[in-house]
Length: 423
Image (cartoon, rainbow, N blue to C red; front, top):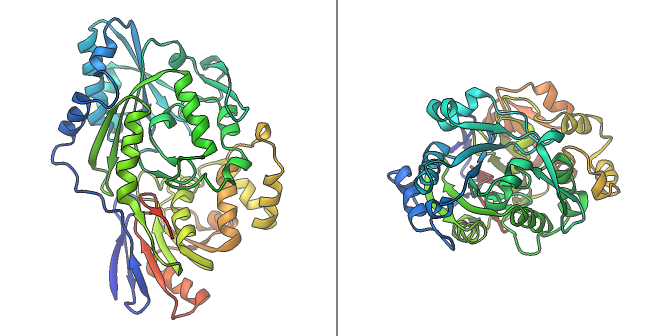
């Protein structure tokens, strides 16, 4: 038996795979975490890519907005935000700074979650605004996206004299990579703008896949939105499975992000032969807090699994399904194929909440069996969504063998959101 550790929640789970079945264990080949995360952020900001230093950009500016990630993203903001604040005030001690939380279409971030991200001092003493994609009073229209969708963005970002952002770069299951321009769209965009950008035709594009930016229609819209609001400077990091910083990238929002994506792409590609069973995860907390987010990890399994095979995903989903429309649609579908056919007829301007997520999930369910391993989530809820369940990875593996046979090959991708599967 081969014992393998899989990220799950804040701790993890182990799985024991018979040696004769194990096709391989596939992980991103990232360098080790830096010895001092704060120092790495400072290094990147001292030598920005394609830009003046942040303190120089701040000189003469009356105000600035920092777009910061929300509770669903494992960005080590404790190391990034204080340095961004320090440098903005170094450039102009009187500058008025607002931290704008990029919730996208997620729920509001709680005070406790803000403290966990930034520390008590920043939450208590800085001006923090949480973006609400459906609050008309927060939004302003800026024309049309290349796709034709309306571009509406949080007005704080539009009206500020200096717009900057923090974030992290990882492979993304339809935007190619996270980070950079994504802090604007979907981060601080109107719900209708997010819907148009995540339309059925775009999600169905062969270029809307993990690790792909060129010809990706979703990336094109996102890039346009960030340029429209003059996102001037970013601090993005690459993190490892322990959520520790491996490398930081700072500077121009396009150049720094592109450099970070190149760094990551050269180290995250894996090429497993398709297996009968793929075991993966959503990288543990905070990315596996709900079923909605866990679809991301499933796409690594999708790319590495034989058709009609089994994808086993470990995800706590302690917050439940993660989206009412997502949940109800999957509960009510007659079959994945029927749901996909229905979605394909929805025009971009009529895109429904969570449609992209249940479209991708239905695409996976149409071709694979999915077993979610969780001891923190209601299994009856998961079953209603078409997901088989187990409480341990070993239990799930036994169930998978019952479906595909005892001689089935098993590929293990411990962190499904950290890799780019090229099989």
